[in-house]
View (cartoon, rainbow, N blue to C red):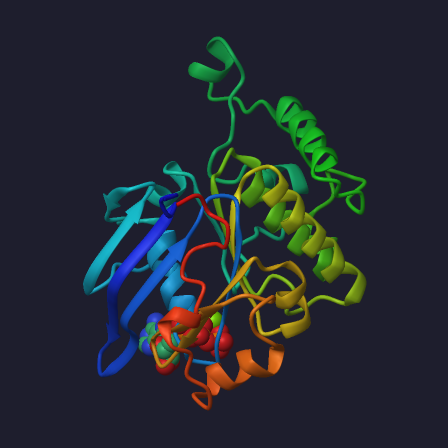
Length: 266
Ligand SMILES: Nc1ncnc2c1ncn2[C@@H]1O[C@H](COP(=O)(O)OP(=O)(O)OP(=O)(O)O)[C@@H](O)[C@H]1O
Ligand SMILES: [Mg+2]
């Protein structure tokens, strides 16, 4: 049986008297796109923030590649290969595209210029950013030295996703990456997600857009009232079913769920 790359059990997160997560379980398997859907306030962002290191759960356990983990910061999660594009985008608008890709992990020049004078290897970072975007098939960003604040919403989103995809991450979490995007830019982000999966990267996609979810997801985790109500697939359930599970109108018995990917070796 293939092991989940990310696993959570019984996760509880309280904000004072508000319960964000109420004994939530979670499984992401290697190389899959897992959509996470649910009503506003169902706990989707809270859930992924635990795996992203932005929240520490009050109760429950988390595993990464079979090893139990406790992240105390997003930095720690990143170090372990979990990259997140948060719902509120974390880009630095005044910096250019290359600087945003390398934000928080700037590379210095080799030799004493870098080690003693702490000079940044701007040229190298720009070259590598450009190569990287090209590899990802992001062609809308022609100028790597353009300030991010002058980019369109879709291009900014592309920078955030590219940043997440840039550093050999194994797990990429995208919280509503297409919420602010038009049809064409959304399609690009969806292509990018498929491309990431093609590279063996596991993707968690939070979205309210059912057609998009049904287009790209291998499995769909439905979050409701702070926990996992069911896991279904586009093959086994319809969009109407998914919405009914979200609202509590439909309950799916465990033997009709897809808690592990279909066809995963037994
Ligand atoms: N930092 C916080 N402080 C207090 N309450 C919070 C905080 N973060 C989340 N909550 C509460 O926890 C619950 C779950 O919120 P969460 O942001 O995870 O929902 P969501 O499923 O991502 O919703 P949306 O679809 O609107 O993004 C909500 O009731 C929310 O008000
Ligand atoms: Mg959210």
